[in-house]
Length: 283
Image (cartoon, rainbow, N blue to C red; front, side, top):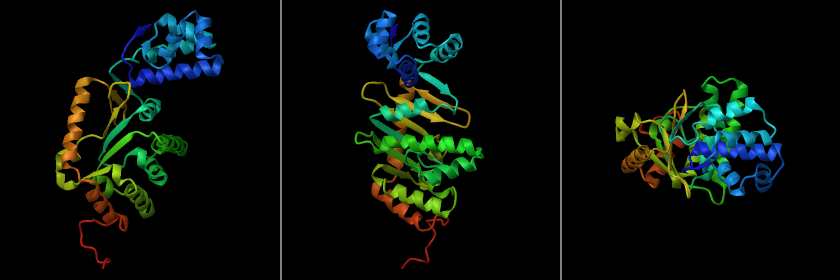
């Protein structure tokens, strides 16, 4: 076992081992360690992603859980990358992202074409998945996962959040008028954590990719971004530094909370209408 700086992926895989132990062995961490002849702290550190288990450690661990060589080989393949500073995952695994959101003390995000998943309404998220052409069963699975992730926002000790959203997301219609109006209202209730980046800020900001920056109490900062092919997690210090600078730059160009609220109010009663055009229905 080697002590290392934990990563989002090492914490995810460590938690997978913990759940494996609890479900298949029924033993506490201390009892499990005793059966293996390990110190209890060794089991704890591996399960918390704070230490890399050797191949022999993994064999002993999974065998005591009643798992065979096929499971071991599959897990070992993934565990090989557990402590890499940069990790790429396919979209059918959101556990690493969900754990990062749940553990974070601060989350800063930037979205260009859609609203942040953590503050999407259920109808908006459903329409978004449906319009991507996903089959009904996948839409339902992804929708439930997204709504479950939002539990982080309802906790008393929820992370400090700041969501930067480009004005393009306000203009792109997802679902029908009711879906958009409900989403605008949801954003109005969250303007204390929302900053809109106006179109007038220029094309440079509109062409930057969506991303998230996580801060943790006892782990290194993490940058997350995604595209249609994969999800990318990075703890590389250079990447983290670059993204901190990006968000500082973004803050200088975004509207403040009151200005963001005012712009949102212009959209609420007419999601199809360009809010910059004169209104004829207002006194």
